[in-house]
Length: 129
Image (cartoon, rainbow, N blue to C red):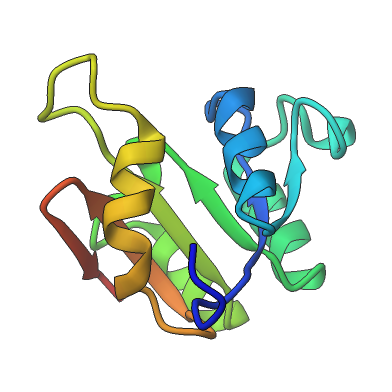
């Protein structure tokens, strides 16, 4: 990652592999993972995790589809709280495609200070709300 790319404060949802957190740390992002540094959030509902992420000024990165349904209450809550969620979707790609490859290819399309819900796949990074 080049020097001019932004560094993000992120919270990785429990469905995100720990190895992705290692990758982000190596790229000099500030990372908390629910499985490691934020264990009190293990098993909590998505809205509780979201409130924590917003309070800590972290982008929540998740792989589950709960954050990508346009009409969902979670998207409304993200907007109301002024937070940011990135859902990384690898479902349309072969198993060999890692979250790291998707992030490396699409993170440049995120704003420096993202707000709202973004769905990131290998070929796109779209803002939902």
